[in-house]
Length: 486
Image (cartoon, rainbow, N blue to C red; front, side, top):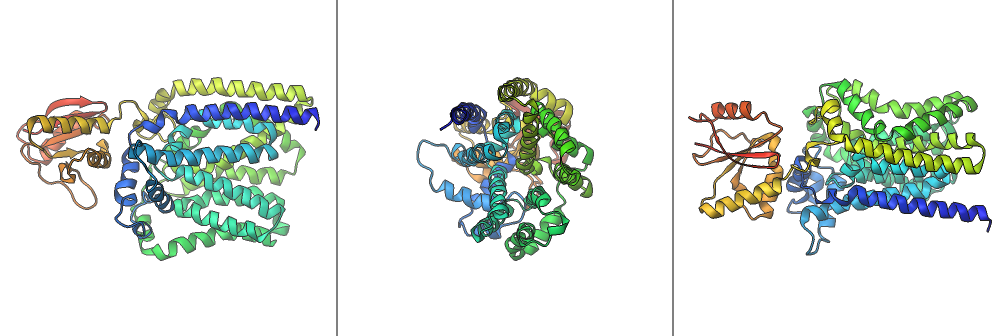
């Protein structure tokens, strides 16, 4: 064995240990945060259905990310004592995140060499990774499936075998069954490998399989649910501000990864001068795909939908960094550049993380933030503690009062944590698609979030329910305030 091979293995070993440490730091504390609205809705309305077979048919809103919900239900069956349910559910996404990092570390070092190290480090330091690697949602599972799809597509193209075709189709089925908009990153996979064929070989069976199997998988999975899909499309959920949606989508990736993005652009320019221009242009299309979707659709999709594009963006970033390294010519300069880029990436990531709440406030106006510091990632988001305080108050007074929850107070989180505390479902009153609350009992309580405008919200509720006096504040619990109706 050559000494160079030994050095390479040692470098990857040290790099792997650093990546593993960064992964632990990224997910360590976030596993223990409370569930927010979307997560609680996924669990209460879909994952906890009486029969697991009902999950597929109960596709009434996009919150039921069917394959994810099904797998989470199977994961729940494995839960043992010592784990609180919400922490155990989060561990499923943590495992998906760990699997994703392992695939990128193992597979990408063959295609992009040492460039994988700073790019992976940048990913793990990014706030978005901590958010979705611990989310009780299907985004990290989708991330994992798309990485697997890339590798199966690579095998199918360069070492054609029908086992790769079958694996790629199953992967597409699972990816799209989790989130149907994952058709976009699967389309990006097709674009990534298109330059190996070009228009002259577009009828090559490998390319046709690559391009057509995702569409076939989408139809196979959702055609039996067509009436429900049509109703969901008519909901027209999303953002009305397309420019803001674009800013959030791209800054969420670029800001925390600025050092490796700059290195990738530099490497891309070097590559552009050496390679066929059409190859470079097709790769650029992958970057602007979300932009095309955002401005083609009104309202625009929620920016978090495009987190599943990150595997392709990360791969392009690593590709760009890889093309920069040979420019340094000597091996010792290359290694110095890799180490230096890792250090700069880590320092920059710390700066961005330290300022994430400022970025969330100034750039995203907080409630529009999917990538830095959304309200449910804040330390004061504590629905579980608020439920416990309400339960304690009911026990001390001997009176179980009903509690009205505003939309911004995440009612499904209170409903779920109320179940954990043994409180009856009838305790909670809130407006939902099944009905609107028209009257409040004389001794009811009201929970308002800091995201509400308290004064205007209280005045609106007073008028809505015909209250004689404005509700009086009883106590605060993190981001929530509890009021008493008089």
